Image 1 (spheres, rainbow, N blue to C red):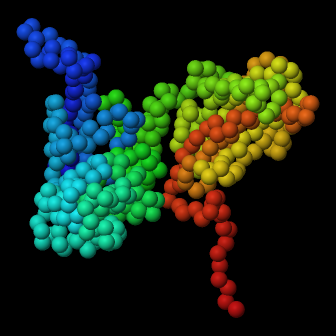
Image 2 (image 1 turned 30 degrees about the horizontal axis):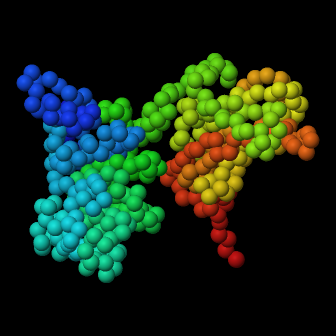
Image 3 (image 1 turned 90 degrees about the horizontal axis):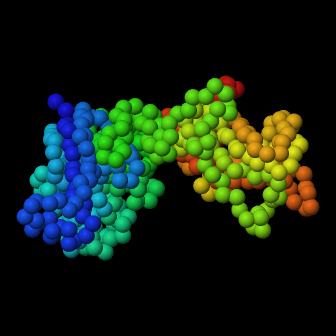
Length: 416
C-alpha cells in the first residue's frame, strides 16, 4: 500500500473576461458559456512509497502548489482521486492555519489539534518545538506581530518536530535565514526513511541532495518522474524551451538557440567597436544553456562575433565570479598557449571548452570576452559580456572548505 496515491487528478477553473460575463452565464436561458476553461492540473497520477523523499519542481504556474493543496485537502479536485495513509503535516503557505490573534503558544496547540494530536501528545513535544523555533519570548505574543522569519520558524517547528508520517512542504523554507534553512534541511535528512516527504522548492541543490526522485511539472502535467539529475536536466530544457543538440562538428548549431547580446551604444562602450559579440550560447555536457552543473561537467561556449577589420593575435577568455563578485577562476587563449588566433573581417563562430572544477556549491556568473590586447587610439580592441551565463554548482557527498577542494596526497603520523 502506497503512503500517497494520486490517480488521474485534474483541476479545472472557469476564467471570465469580466464580472458581467459571470452574470450572463448564470442567467442564460440557452445555457450559453461566457468563460474559458483552464486546467491547472490535467490527469496527474503518481504514487509515493513509505519513507520516500520526493521533490516536485517546475516553472511558476506549472501546478505544483495546486497539486499539494489538493493532496492536503485545502482544495478539491475537479476529477480523480487522492489517498493518503498516515497523519499529515503540511507547510503550504506562510502562516496558513494560524490565528493571528492567538499567541504562538496557543497556535501550537491549535495546529497540532488540527493534525489529530491530543493535548498530552503536544505537551510531550512542546519543548522540542520551542527549541527548534527559537523565537524566545515572542512565543507568548500574538502571531500578528511576528516577522515572516518568525512565522516560518514556528510553522516549520510545529510541522516537523511532531515527526509526522507524511510531511508536505511548499517552498516555505526560502523565507527563513540561511542558518535556519540549514537546521531545517538537517531535520528533513533525519526524517528521510522514517517519514514520507513531499517537497516543492526552487532550491535545486537541496532537491538533489534530499530527493533521489523528482517529479517535473509543466503547464499542469507531469513531464518527468524519476532520477533527480535527469529531472533537473528536464527542468532546464523546459525553462529554456530547448533540448539537447547533436552535431557532427562544433559549428553545426541552430542559431535560434543563441542568446542575443545587446551591443551598447558606442558612446557608453569602454572598448573599441571594431569587434563585437553578437550572439552567444553554451552547453553543459551537450545540454543547451543548462543552469545546473557539478565537478567534471564539460562546458562548451560559442560566440558569434563580427569584426569590421582583420584582427591578428585574437584573445578569447572567460572569468567566473561568485554571487559576491569575487573572481573564482578564469582563463584566456593567450595564457593557455593558444596565441595564433586570427579573426577575419565579417562573421565568425568561436568556441572554447573547459571542465568545471571542484568548487563549493552556489551561484556563479561567467563573463565572456574577446580582444587582441593592442591599443588603438588609447583603446583596446575588445568586447566583454559581463555575467552572461548563470550556473548553480552542486557538490556531491563532499564538504569543501573555502572555494576549491584541495586534494591532499598524504596524511600520516610518524612515531618520534
